[in-house]
Length: 251
View 1 (cartoon, rainbow, N blue to C red):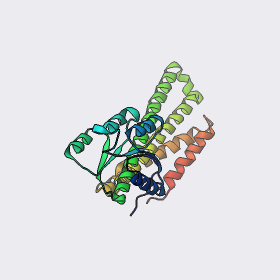
View 2: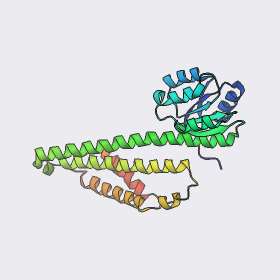
View 3: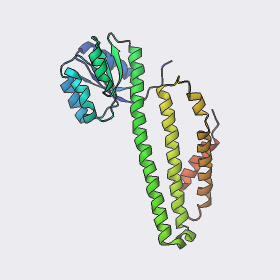
View 4: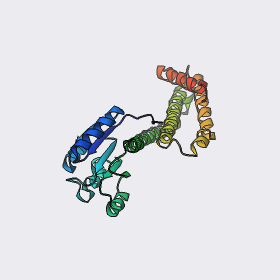
């Protein structure tokens, strides 16, 4: 069964013109955007000016002596996963790839279904990394919000009785619940990388997801209780979103 294809941008690098045309055509049919480079130097120019989710590169081509192209990836596009292809596999290149951002080492002639599976996995890795950055940024925002609430309370405890404190806390709870939702989506994305992993069913039904539902329910209650103290269309929309999630049927 073909996995659901995530949107992604791929750079293909190979000096075999026919193979490059074939791979780019097939991957575009699968929903991926592809750029093609005929050698390492052209691939470097692409990497220096464009953003990609995956690099698929031949080993034995001009501009990739001693895997120079692959070694430049962390500098040009940090975190970019790489799939290596070769018609002449060797122990030295396989060993070198271990210390590089290589997720697969494929031998030509390629089986396209195998390449497609690794492409899906590589693009999913990239998406997980981006989502981790977003979650970390949201959590950092939550920490900063809490610091602001504490400083405001210490400066004027009376503000709490005037509704301003409740409004600030409601916004903070909104950010916290948003981070929990991000983590849930992150988990689903991570599962999609390896949907056959034996532990997934147990984790999906784990108590952490029950805790997520409880947190959303608490968030709804706080938003409802503070709606008169701190009127906001954004908070009202957030409350409705949480209510829809809690009421949604369980799969």
